[in-house]
Image (cartoon, rainbow, N blue to C red; front, side, top):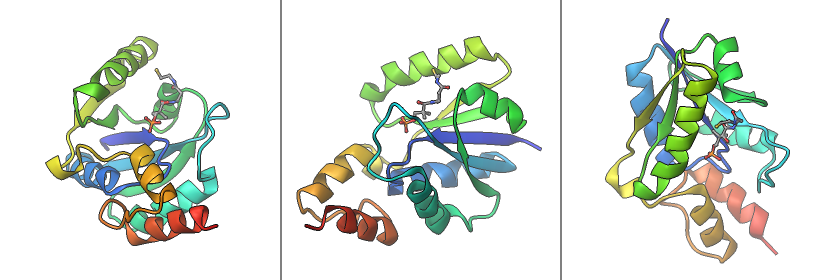
Length: 159
Ligand code: PNS
């Protein structure tokens, strides 16, 4: 069984994330979308809300499983018996952080390979951070995120 982990904050999941999930699931027998629980980050959506939005949008996709994790990613990969970590790479600006993370993870566990997938060009400028900002300022995010996420964002920022 070739299993990959697709980790992230998913705060919230965007169409760009879903595009990467679709690409990854064609390459692996199973893709575990792993939502990070990190005490140091202050996400807009709680861990449970982020999981729920992923379950609603990607939970029924064949060979995709939604999970949460805390602690080191490589330890989670080991526990899940996964040989690969998937990360989306949008632009050169992503590269430095991704490069650092991939090599650090390799140092921690050489058995886990990081694989970068490029989303559709139309999603290269899309990020959860920008989507949250647009929603906070009252803009329309419906072409960037699934309907349930757009609704959840509106709910968060309604006065
Ligand atoms: O969506 P994000 O915020 O870019 O995802 C970053 C994430 C959660 C994948 C990364 O912070 C992570 O792997 N955290 C787990 C802790 C860990 O293993 N840190 C060492 C990696 S260098």
